[in-house]
Length: 478
Image 1 (cartoon, rainbow, N blue to C red):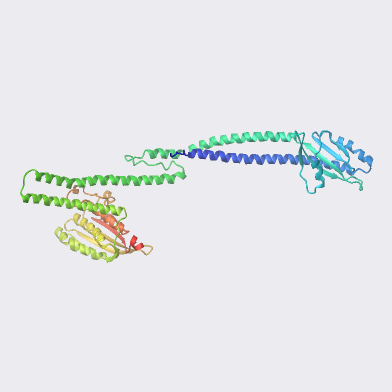
Image 2 (cartoon, one colour):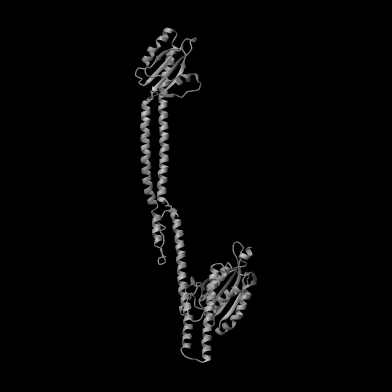
């Protein structure tokens, strides 16, 4: 059985991150402060202990006789007046204890340190497991050179220091816990506010549907970090809207285009079957049906060609030829029709390309067919072929077909190459084609890594196509 794992929200993750970061910072800062305070207390204690040790050292240096040595305990008592918590132990040159503060036994490890060179830090111990002391020990010479040095141990009660540090650590932990909770709450609030644009983008995204593809995400009101994401999503929505519109228009146009021939076939067939007819009449009905079938066949073939082109399944042939020769061949084909319509055909220039001869002839033929259809009597069609170079010295063949006549309205230029699109809607079922010619032309050129566009001139229409002199196909790349 598959177990679903609940994913943590980004708000939860950010809140946890804020809380963890603040805890770490407060903990490190608290430990540093605690260490600094402890160090300060130790320095204070060492200053007091060192001062008392120097006082004793000075007193022992004045000892010149046993009588002077016997007076030392009284001096020690006098020197400790007013120094609460300070304890001293003094062993004379003969090893006897000359003075020792009551109730403060010094541990042997402290006294043994006087024999160890280089030990300067204080020694800490506890009396009866409760009262802590910090002390130092040292050898103190007397004023008699022949006597061995005396041993002095000085210590101070650090209970008040320990109490302060215990209270400080409790306060520190309370501050850390409170700071973590406060930072977590603040982090949750900040994360919620910071992620509000994402929730707004999600809300807007839920409003997008097939009927509302015009919805866009706000760009100006989101943070800079999300602006690029919003722009990318808006671009995606624009492409989806355009594709959906084209698909809807295509489906509608396809239904209209198929309805007419199918309706004609059904009507003629039903009329023919309504009563008995002669073989000649049946032949006329079959010939009419054959024309409709041919029209349907051409439309289906064109649709298959466009579908292959959109999916990159068209691989042009590789043949080098002069486009001017193909234009002249098409002039021969359309010459009679042009002469009948009173239209003059003219060719200027030449240009060699490597590509599929039949495909490119079909593309140019579609342009000439459209030009002949919309050029008035007495007009002319001029085809110009030239070779141009860009900044990278890449050669491209430019072919322009210009015909005189009424210019195409500007609002139609961007859709001329859409499937089933006609500038004059009244010609939709006039038999002038299915409206796929320019769409096929563009597909052929793009298969050759070229392109086409239409523009208007002064009392004329111009269709320009660009074709690289050589193309790279999957076969040639191998």
